[in-house]
Every structure is written in C-alpha cells, then in structure tokens.
View 1: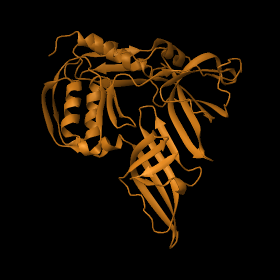
View 2 (view 1 turned 90 degrees about the vertical axis):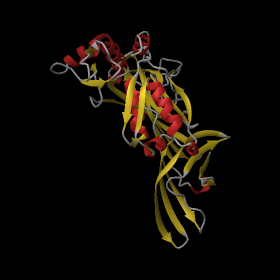
View 3 (view 1 turned 90 degrees about the horizontal axis):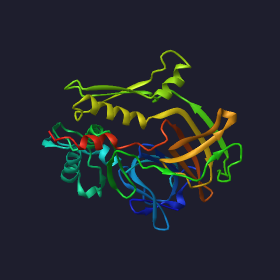
View 4 (view 1 turned 135 degrees about the horizontal axis):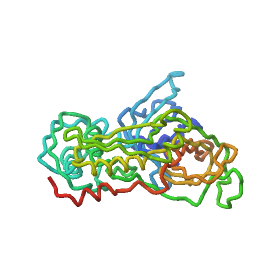
Length: 348
C-alpha cells in the first residue's frame, strides 16, 4: 500500500494503526492518518490530493481538508491529516446564478456539470440516469454545487456521488450487490464468514421511517404511503407506530405520481436494526446484501442486511475492517418504477 499526497510519498511516515478510511452508504468517504516527519522535507497542505494505491490500483482518492502539526523538537513533528472523498470538490465549489429554460432535472444536471464545473478539477460524467422526462424551468441563485445537485437529484428521487476515478453519478439506485458470504452465529451455513471477530446488534429509530409522504407544494398533489409490515411491528411496541418522512418534487403532477414516488422512497428505507462486526476479510463493500442469522440476538431466521458503512484501519501491513449493515425493509432493490411510469407522460 502506498500513500501519496500531492505526488509525494508518505508511506514510510505513517504511524501504525492510524490510517483509517471510512465509506458511508450514500457513497461519501473520509480519510484520517497520523504521520511522523523528520528533517525539513515536504509537509502536506490542506487542499492537496490524496491517493492510496496498491499495485497501480486506486484504493481510495480524495482531498486533504485539514492538517495539524505538533512539533516535538526542531527536527521532529507529528502531523494529523483529515481528508474527504472527491465529492468534496462539489461541496466546496460555488456556482453563480444559473437560469435555465424548461428541461428535465437530468438535462439540467448534465448542462450545469459540463458548463460550470472546472475541468481543472478532473471530474468527468459517469452516468446520469434519464429520469421521467418531465421538464421544469430552473432558477438557481449562487450556491454550492453540491446543494444544486442535491436539489436536482431530489427532483427524481435520485442520489449523486463521485467515485474514486473522479466520475460523477446521479442515479435512482445506489449500487447493490449480493453475496454468497453470510453471518451465521449458529455456524451451520458453510458459506458463513469464518473470520468473524466481534458481532453487535443495535436498534435505533433515528432515520427510521415506515410512512412516507410525497407531494408537490405548488399544485397540492399528495400521497401518503405505508409500509404495512413495519407499521404492524412498531404498533406492537407503542402507540400508532408511525415514523414518517416527506419528499417534495415539482415533477409530481397527480396523486398517482405522488404515490409512485412515496412508495419508491419507502422501499429504499432501512429498518431500525443495525449490525456491526469486525473482520480481516476484505470481501465486504458498500451496498452488499448479506444474510444474517443470530438467534441469541433475536434473529432466529435469516434476514437480509445491506452494508451501509465500512471502516478500514491499516495496521501491521494490512487493513482490518469494521462493517456496519442495516436491515432491509424490502428484499428487492430500489425500483425505478415511478420514473418509468412518469416517463410515459407527455412532457410539460
């Protein structure tokens, strides 16, 4: 593994056990490391590019956002560095006021990216899904590029991210992948993870929802969708059992449009259950669906969990991993059904 910052190699300066890469479910990531520097060599500067590579493969890339240098002697210092994935470029870059004639959110995102994001930053377009094909006029006041793309993505119920190759994506489905490897505390599944070092089950209502409202604040189109099974589960615990959220989209023209969006947003919602386990195995990635059986924790039958966060710590020449996964409320990937249905409509 090689760590370079602004082209300088700092691998030999890494304090063992401090290099940490965290990747989150919405495809954001962070970097942390402590270095020991001697003499008067180059010192990393905030705003420089970070690359972690192994045999010409990029393990992680991003931008250095914070440095802290503690001097121990005239020739010895400790340097603490924090970085963020390449999405930081769009979170720091401010767009001017942009007024667009009627176009789809996809066309607006593509136009803004191509016309306003500086080519010097090295970002390119990966995939921007076409969406439903409905158009709106847009008037954006000066704002961070990330907030503009947040708005356009939300119009379609999409997500946006930048990968390690500096490619920009805006899609309705976060990457999902199935796995033969399971977590089985009964030790009956031959495909279970053998190197399971620790296992924790948590439940939290933070961010949980079993009711979702989709609406258009301009024409009052509205629909309230319920996840019946989850609602029944929570009613048994207390009160109405309702945990709600809402999404506004100017693309919603009818109650049917609102229903399709509300149902899609609800189908992608995580359950309240979350597992965390540690392993030296590098086979887990964000979006990976794994089967979990843990009777001692109340999971008597296999349930599907989706990896929502990975934490990799470099120690003694190898990465060690902490994996977080949330229970999926649906056994099918997030569907593009509502976009496909709206695509059949006549463009405004």
